Image (cartoon, rainbow, N blue to C red; front, side, top):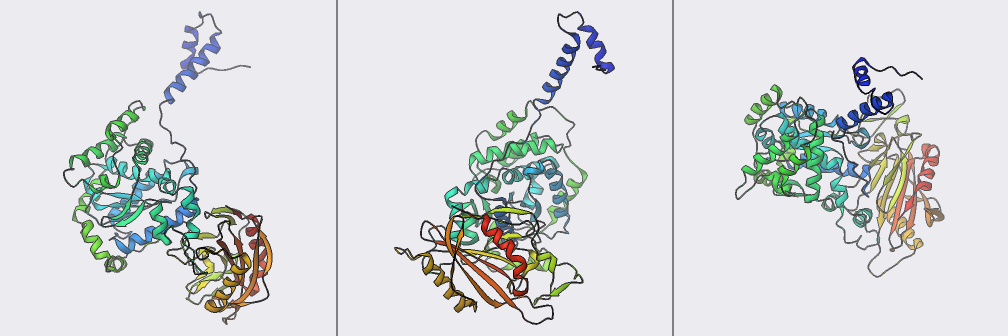
Length: 518
């Protein structure tokens, strides 16, 4: 085999000809050694690990929390110079993250004076006006954003919700159909976010991280900065600026992000051996936006909390065109009507192929139950106690209910009681008939789900989706209830218009076959 060396290496090869080793092998080894040494200190992203909470759940909870921010805080419209700039900067930072560990990040700006920023599980991120005006240059602002994005990358909020709490989420949000409490875990969106260290208080939405989380976010944020072409020292510089403004009331960012100890020194030590690059420190775009941000009317945390109690921000945001419209897969889209579309009761349209199941299946971890579902169907978590987890295509949901898809919930018995699955199914059936007008089409049948024997009942009701002729059409609702070891039960309702149920039944049966119970 002939190996041609570049001209720059031929002289090196000649220089080592007198060495008592094969000169060609020496040259190759030396070159490889130089290459490895040059790359050894280049920063790399760490493995974020795998928390017990699924990506679907994190994304869904983050989107719901983001929607609440729009209800309780003044958010600038997407068209504002600040939001446009923050999104462009955010996209530059996101591009550095390995795709297999990235999230559908989206960026928003809050008209709040305090220096702060926060990123929610799954990617929604909010930057205060105060953070934009406090940064000395673009690199410092990028550092703040990179730090927050690192919390999402490392899935810190999801890791706070331990396995026991995550497992109890579905039970915690369940409707107590049998009249009992669904457990000690707080239900609904507030309860679930509380387990993740996310709270809405006088200071607005607050993310509570440990000092270990902060150290990781500093380290990963520095990597994001470096790979985006900024000097990672800017992150340490921004923290120095914040600490210089301490006093009796330190900046809100430091209150929400506890100092892990020697923060600036730790960042500087982390980056001291990284190869030097031709860093970008600032940009004309940042200085223009920063100057404009000074003129934007901003509010203190106390003013925001007070006005939020009366719903003032929800009204003003809508009036100003600041409407939450997530870019991720959980968004409900209404497309132009195709030729085979049928009209919904709310004036939207739905394409029949759009509601059919895709060929690929993905897994959703809902705590006590893991279930596979079509990749083109989204998981939507409930906003308050008693509501269902929904797995459905976006086009299958109307303002009057779910026309296609699966609804999941849980029931817990009264304290001291332990009803069997037949009693639970009978109670569920009675409740569905009395409160929802469903008509059973036979008696309960035995069914095995996740190696556990449950019960199955088919019901008939009116679909929220009119038929092709515009007239009301009947619906099939397939109830499947499965007992849990603690005496509670999980139940699912598979829904489709009567005329379409047979086409979707194989998908529903495949979903049941995929279920794993804990």
